[in-house]
Image (tube, rainbow, N blue to C red):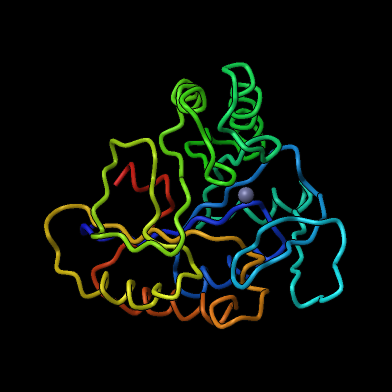
Length: 248
Ligand SMILES: [Zn+2]
């Protein structure tokens, strides 16, 4: 193993994850899918504003182009799809709630129970979490640590990191970029060209499957495939799940 790692993280357990995993297989990409143990089979639509999905709604509105399917896989579909050698499953909270006002009890109900349910479902101890809406407080962090969770992913959009350094001793992961960031391709090229510093360097990209159904310049599967192809063709990069960042 070298010192440069590429990993991806996608949320909500959606039908579009099938295409993401097909592309991951094609290019040897490994990554993590953050799912909620009590939302299997729920079907809504995401309403977007440009490339930002700002709310889920029960039905498509007047302009269907402004909506994408937010269809969560059934339990059986999820068990089959994510039991895959390139995939790690992580927690996204039992009910996908804002977590910034949780009491200890609420945090335990939403997080510990999710970790336990998903661990049982997939047959290994769930090691990670992604904060729904990027929202959390100190009670959430305490419960995650007590549950043995090794990492919890926050959210970044439209904000370039100053470097690719990665600290495996931190609980909270700040991603390198969002998959639809307009600078994602240039930033990935910078990562590919970055010399080996002897320290761990990580390109960590996050997103949602529905974002590739937007049909916008960045919101399409061709864009994701281009990024995967670039990373795959580069030398000196190892492909890992999020959890494997802590075991390399
Ligand atoms: Zn989510």
